[in-house]
Length: 112
Image (cartoon, rainbow, N blue to C red; front, side, top):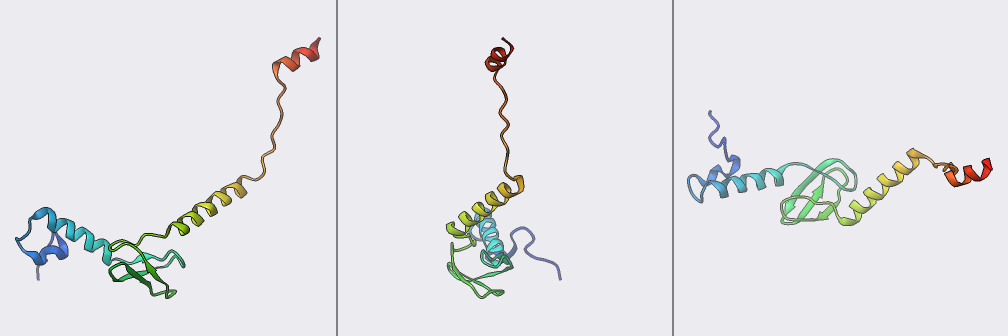
């Protein structure tokens, strides 16, 4: 059986109604909202939309409140992640020893 809604995906159920732009937008939103998202707590790709703004992780059982169509990590989690990345970079670089280079004026004084 041939695929009937190649261009708009699940929004093909609207047929020729409502216009091309709206059908494509609905298809994009539905495609994004129905995929598995990454859990901000356990980092597993196991979060699905349960209802409008309610997301549930099948891996760790966490229930999250987020936007309607796309799971967005809470600001606190984003802040923790950015702080952890900055701390890891600082540890990787290690303590920097600052070598004092003599200024040209000091060198001239020493020569005299």
